[in-house]
Length: 513
Image (cartoon, rainbow, N blue to C red; front, side, top):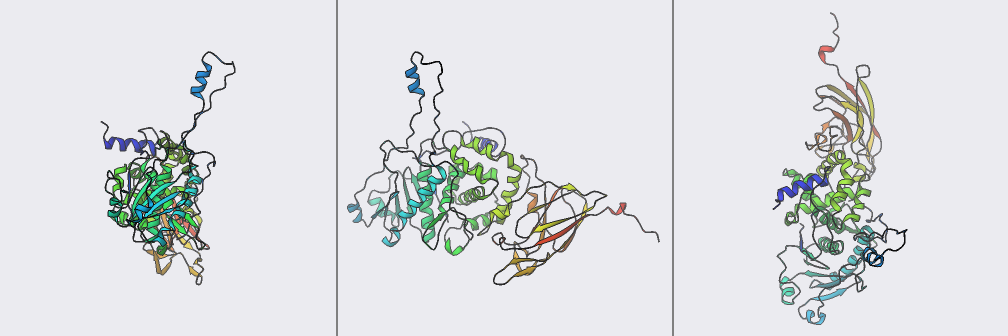
């Protein structure tokens, strides 16, 4: 029997490393899955996929026969002709609403959700409309579900339970349902406990409803981090002043996302020495999600890949490969060319993640550096203050001494009044333990897709107005101005940095006395 360790190694080799390996981790739509859980806003999720292409196995048309029919051609034609694809029939149990009323369980219905719950009617009344909007967003992103054979509209049934015993007595909680702490889904039904916080109640409902739609097809296969991360992504929402709900947002205002806690969870994990690399996340099995942190990491990875300008188009195309055995090869083909960059950007993002993190302005334009020479030992580089890490296109050599001198005056914020700074930073406000506005530097060394060493750009050098140092590694020198990753957009100006390669003392000319 193949061991769990062997499967994990094969998954790593196939998905985020060149090569091939095992089939994708999968879960059919009738499999129970447990979910658990503890300010700039991205656009509503959308898809570049043609709206008439469902996320179901593609069916090829028969080859053209230019020689005319042959014996038994009709039989062969019937076998090879495109077959219609259907989603499973609706087998949800029907319940007597009047009987359930006697248990204090009321029914609320919309086009996509039939909800049974014992929570307050004024809250319950609002929930079905959010699932209707979610269904529209999901089918825009993943493509529409195929029809069932009965040609009925897709609808799911949800059970939100304040008093679990009432639902057990009413026969709404299946006797074979394993214990769960927060929520579960099975086919086109989901069960969840009511939550203390209004936002998290909706989040958990949307998470489970996402599974009910995206895992409807029997042949759905994808890695667990993707299935759970996408449910987390669509469940992370914001309701604007007009009442419209937006899915897949980057939380910014903590007061709007009470009870969610994914970013705080990741920061605690990293502080405890439990950073999760791409390969760690990719190797997770469904049972790993009996703990809470994998949901946070999976959300963070899906949010990163779905938003990052370099990766998002390829990431969104994974929706076309969710059935059969196509998912792992699709992941490999999509991201293998950029593995060195991904292995750098992912830990930088995870270690700096905060509410409202601006992924687009943190994008690194990777440019390899050229060394300073004896006849040209000095170069100047301009650092934009409204971006993340930027390549100086200067290569440093390990063991060589350099001097950095920075000048310039720039603005870090405009409200309530302009905050001006110089490269040494503003000492009364700090971000990541350093003064706001301080010039920072790092050396990028990763160029090999198989390089699994710790990320060198996490070793940040505080430059300020001047720094003399000996390069610890050979690689390209990068700069950024220190600021909150959610506050880059309103920065203005730049810093001029003069980089000088210092000659070894033994090589320096001595002045005769």
